[in-house]
Length: 175
Image 1 (tube, rainbow, N blue to C red):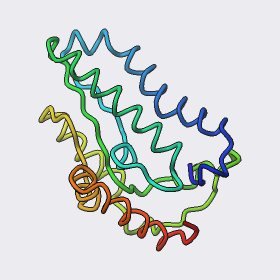
Image 2: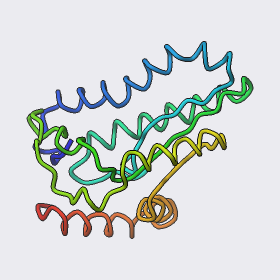
Image 3: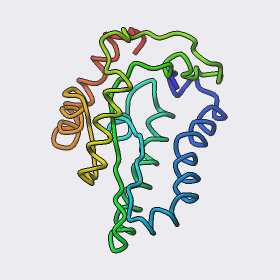
Image 4: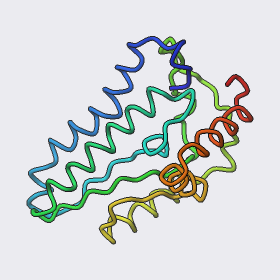
């Protein structure tokens, strides 16, 4: 979702929660018996927006924060059963997602403001995810910018507010 909260229709936020949060909940619930049996790994594809709220992405950030909280609680709950839970934040990935991003009214954006050629390919993301699953990692943040954002937000949240806002102003101009 790409819209300021003041402009967004609440039904769009509900739609994002259905896809990002409840999509994770429903698929995890369906797979859980098999994961318990195999002591496998649950993988949640989150975002830096799930670790750090982003302007113009209030609904997206909220859905990813909810997902991260669910996965963290589930990780702790399943620890005695040997099931691993991986929360992955791949960063900007070359994909169709920005074309499908919702605007304030719920319509697809059908455009990307970013240079897809500078992004990690989905194949490269998949290789990193596979390695993280094999290593039974709990968190995977792939980009340097993402790692820095998570670190700074934890230790210097006021500064991070200003840096994130400046970055989005530079990229999108309307903040």
